[in-house]
Every structure is written in structure tokens, then in C-alpha cells.
Length: 267
Image 1 (tube, rainbow, N blue to C red):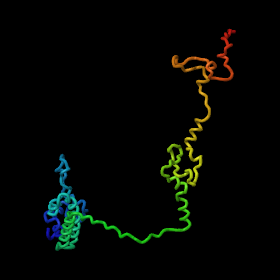
Image 2: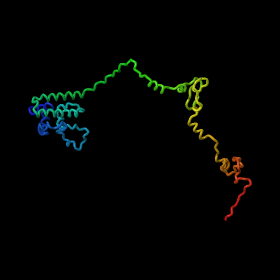
Image 3: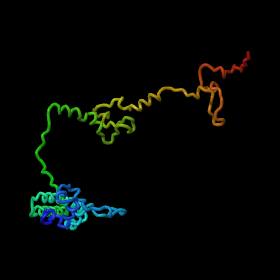
Image 4: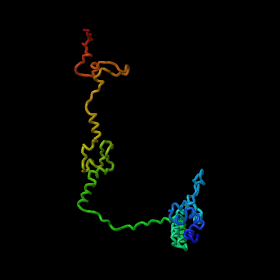
């Protein structure tokens, strides 16, 4: 194997190289095979039929018998087997073309695999403290001009709002609903303050005004015009509204003093 495939033997060993070439069908067939297929050469799943595959080894075939795979920690063995398969494919292609009969290329690939596995086992670098930027003490440039002034005037706090946000010590403020309820007006409308006055329309809430509109006016109860009266003794009784003085105006023909019962004759 040192003369037939020196580079492949330098990576996986003479015994594993012979098994790979034998199951692949020769060195040329092994060189034409992709690395994903080289990884599973020699893997037999029939040995695990009927058993759980949770604790089984990786899917690597003859590459599990290499010295590099056996010396790798269990958590990195599957990753190392993929790297071994890719480098073994490159070494087999070099041997198939007789590019390096001395096996120097295979030894360089083996050393590269070793370095990669050692690098995987290194702890991650410590997190360095992030330095803050140097504060810029120079004054920032601010925009100016007519458009900016107009915008500030449009969004600035008005004089009415300034007075509404202020309160005098020991003096109750006016509110929209009265008695401190609703929206307070602060210094607006205070006597002797020589400030803006609060309009009477602002002190009445829209909802309250609408409610008063529906409830306002004179309404007539239905019990005062009907002949039914509620008493504590009998409950509901039939009475004469004219006699109780509840209805004024034209006397009813049903409850008049001169009215009598009439009988209609059948025709």
C-alpha cells in the first residue's frame, strides 16, 4: 500500500486504505467516488436491526477504524469523520494520477486534519469589554430658517394651555363639570388674575349638554292621565282621575256626575 496509494495510507493507514479500495473496486473507482459515499463505505446497518439506534455509533464505515477517529473525543467524531472522508478522497485522486509517489501530500493533509481537530477543542475566546466611544464635545449644528420657525410656532404650547397647567396656591380651580370634576382650567378665569377668561361654553361638557337636552322640558306621566292608581292597601285600583284632581280640563264622559250606564238594543 505504500507504493500503490502512499498518500491515502498516510492519512487513514495501510489497513483501512486497503479495505476502502477493495470495497470501492480499485483506486480509480475510489478516486471517482464523492466524499459522502466514501464516508459510509463499510457501514453495515443490518447488525443493528431490531435495536435502538439512539446510542449507536456514527454512520461512518471503515473510517471508524482509523487512529485519528479513535483519538477524537466522542462529541467531535462525526465531524472528524466527514473531514477524514473529504481529505481521503483528495489523497486517492492524487494517488490515482501518480502526482506524489513519496506521500508528502498525504502527510500534509493528515497534519491539517490534526490541527483542525485541536482547534475544535479549544475554548472560545473570552468576551472582551467593549470600550465606549470618546464623547464629542463639539456643539451640534442645528437647522434654522423660516420653515423651522414656522414649525416651532405650530407645535409650541399656547398661552391658554400654559395657564391651564398652572394652579394658584390655596385657590380652587374651575373645572368642566364643577366641584373639581372633569377637566381643570388652572389659572384660567381666576378673579383678579387679569388673564384670559374661560368661555361659558367651555365649562359645559358636550355629553352633559346632550344629556340635559334629552332630559329637559316638561313631561307628563302616564299614570296621571289613566284611570289606574297605586295604593298601599289594595295595590292597583280603578279610580276617577277627575275626583283626585289629577287631570284638569274637559271632564270625562266616563266619570261624570250626571253620566249613567246605557244599554244598547240589538237590531
